[in-house]
Image (cartoon, rainbow, N blue to C red; front, side, top):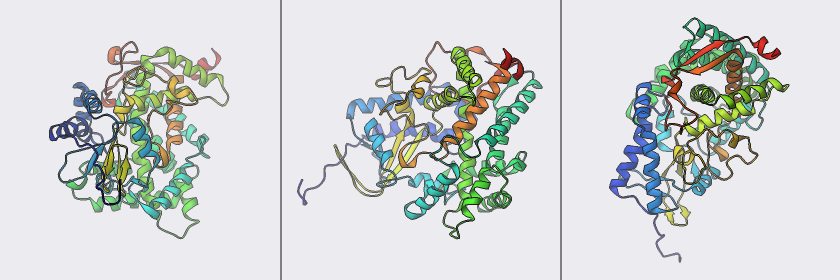
Length: 456
């Protein structure tokens, strides 16, 4: 192609196909609540299998258009959907240039409570904020400096959760679990004194509900200010063995205010919420696959220190089967070249994670529980299974999330025998449903002592 020729454009979906993508892929996920889940809507999407329909829609388009990004026929905004696994890997590997994380729709949502978070920053500001996250969360270290303290928090709250469940006719539902989970999160992030501070959690929940509407709803600036003042209190305390203490340690060494430390804390609290959903779903998967659950518990009991690999794999499988980030968004900072043509600058890119996680055309038994896949050194190989995203934009707190979630599963399994209620909610003999709403899952327990298990 010479300098005067016009670059070939990427294929563009028809108007009908674009409407189908918006209505079957984007709309159900937006309706569920991108920033704060809406339980009733999640139940409707689960009941009518809308997530599976969205996957089939993208598979049909992939069959028609082949490899390469597909531009959408949207008059007011440049948008494209990624259909090829190699392209998904390419986009994630080349973040933030030329595929930036601060996509416009994402900025409009997260701007409600964390406008200076690294995910919605670019250039030097992103680099500074991302570096702070990586240092505090120790993103390259599977065993955080405060891992033992976090594990102790989990043990204490698991004991309280089992005791609480016993007072509720041995039934564990989502609200009961969520209450315990939020206590864990507050203690890990803010410190032990925040254990019962439900106000800070409610403030963030209200901000996240507003964020679901993005640019369509005015920002609640007074509420955001109160929430940040609340965080500032714990920042000044910097309780030992909390992420806030680690944050204070790193930021007190710097005079520069560019990292916006408190807004990074907002993201940690926010991101722990879907991690709780993944834990609840992982417990359901373990109940539906008792042999694997038994082997995972044996692995915990037989090793010193206990090995959590199998339980971490069950959490990763819950995130593969039911991604808590179903839409990964990027935005091109310049025109980009693809085999099929050129994509303009300022194009929003959509990576629909369920489409890749559940693609039975390429992934063996895509709709089954496959934790062993995560235990292999190469994992899923080059297939884009991205429970925590990937590349330079990968979640910096992934190791802490897997630490806390696996420890909680271990603590619950050691203290009680759990069963889904009703038992047929999930079956290991059948394909996993397109969506499992954590808000509509219940468990029954039969308590047994930790000591008896240890001596059995």
